Length: 308
Image (cartoon, rainbow, N blue to C red; front, side, top):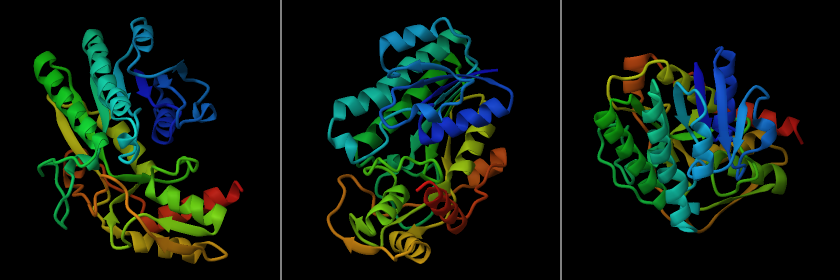
């Protein structure tokens, strides 16, 4: 089949593209290289450079054969969404609407969207299911939830199979170590290796649900192969609560000399703590996290230390 993968030069998009190609499919990719890198894109990908919300880019897709769309591109930081809310809306929501219309016109078999756990907002200290009410705290999260609603309406109105994957905190080798405003683990690791000190915005008691990149790629492939009769939504998470202080301890144990740590400030729209319930994805499609955070963190550290 022919896959369109947006954000194909990025952390998740590039590794998903490699897996899709390995499975024997063809890949068309879109990326504006804002945070992704050209060298991440496999040679076999038919690459279109530009923004997914640009009409010129969308027009180029009119001539392409597309069976499945994996929409992974987009501004991916709650903090950065406050810098330019209009751009955030364009890259995360307008792009989704335009690509949905392409999917409708071409009769695509499945439209899979990279949503975010940020749509839930502040939540109780318990595993959060897909049925939990959504109350976004950042412009980024607002745009992600709006895109989910567009998927739901296109699925109902045009019988287009659509799935939203609410990604929790994705990490692993290949994450952009230059982007210091997105990716908790990559930010801390980059600081520890380059500066010997870690600056933490917020409390050490905050917690997240970390999901390794290979597990995320596996989720995209398994979901794409199983189009729903109607709109679906899944958490992509480990189901395990990991505190900031545990990340710091893991980095201090693994990196020499031991990095110093300073806790100061906060991040606009930041959730204090959230972890997900992964049961729906496992029960319906047999997909679950295979890599523990301890194992994944060590693999990430080893990878980046080997590139220094």
